[in-house]
Image (tube, rainbow over all chains, first blue to last red; front, side):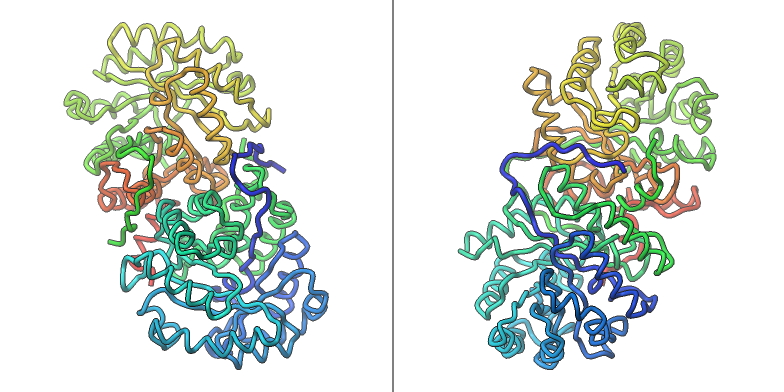
Length: 315
Length: 315
């Protein structure tokens, strides 16, 4: 299988963590209903490919995200992986009710979904920007009391479809308040994919300047405008060591109306391996997993690496 | 129309030149035969969108690249633009015969197509790596004698499908010999799209270390493995100010067997404008041009920006 020539760059970390979001963020945007057994196999294959963290599902109210209404059944299907505990399998929890359902299944890592903008907070959380913290507080407190790790997503960090530009100092303020609540890690999301590398660098520098821990920041880029990998490279240079990505670019077909354009894990791995940055991911196993999943969904993967390697030759 | 928030980055140039290759490198890989009048309109629209250089066609022997067999007719169709001279309209010339045909049409900018690898030189030029320079010599000499500017493409700079890895010092040596012949600019091509940003940085540094002029280097990235824009960002940081790109990603549908995956001009412009680097390109006019051309070719543009803006909303 073709691979990039490794030409390391000075100043980069030797290893980074890819936080795989395909089973949750990827599938939640897919219209094809995926059977729970297929989802379980997807998670197992991702773990087998070497992904060090796999976000498995979301314990939202089942009516909200029909694709993920089977969260409890999926947890039962992968109970062995959950209890083994070697690979964290975080789940999204919108509130204490969702958290309790996750704890019942023995899950030890959860994520909450915050917003950097007023409009998106109101639309997605039915709360104002400032009110979201009070809403998250009991969930985070209960999780920490149970010894469970809490990641906080911050959506719309680089632009908002209703508000336009999003001030960097507002994103830092939201992030600080989520750290203060007890989040162990923030995932800074470019939910609509408009960000560019200088914006990434400036946002990360602003977090550092505010005394916040860059080693507890993750980045979550969408490829809606083709910027995701360039932005990931800028974040890597700025000291970030955790990168969200979706196997096969799942949830992100650029030609679909519902496109969210998740950064494809394979395209990220290709870049990291070329840069000599270890990810622990076996690209061949991952590509084969994404091709298998693409077959289940009945459409080709939007990952460029998956498409190129599936062609088998670039001569 | 949505646009990126401009967040400039220190150390970048204030302005760069996009060298548009859509009418030549884009179309030459398309199977749909495009009428010469459509090609002429394509060139005119690209010029109207603010592209400062538009490579128009190739004066190869007509049987070699059927799509570009109408090079002389196209030159007649755009004779007013050629004679106006404000926007350079380079054409590829494989040899002196091609050059004479271009000179007959009043063209003042030509390009030759060299190789950084033995195998590709033999396959594409029917010459060995060392022999290609002797082959180019009379063409370059005649062009310069006529006061015509010569760009030299260097293909397979980051990897070769037959040879695998390509040593950086070999690429620099080939580049030096092309400069010595009289090329005014080199376009360093990642023909199969395998390169990654550290490789780009290292290659450009090697050119600088050899005393060669980085301001006379252009980069030509393909998105076969999704790396093109990250590589362009690395090149921008390394001091490159000329970037080859293809409107709408023409010639580069990632789902087609024939994919070459040219970097889409729109995706590059989005990044540059976000970085506060001027390109002179009006993105809206360019997107409308690419959508028009996609209609002529009967398939959607592979550019992420074109696809996202065509959807009209990312809410």
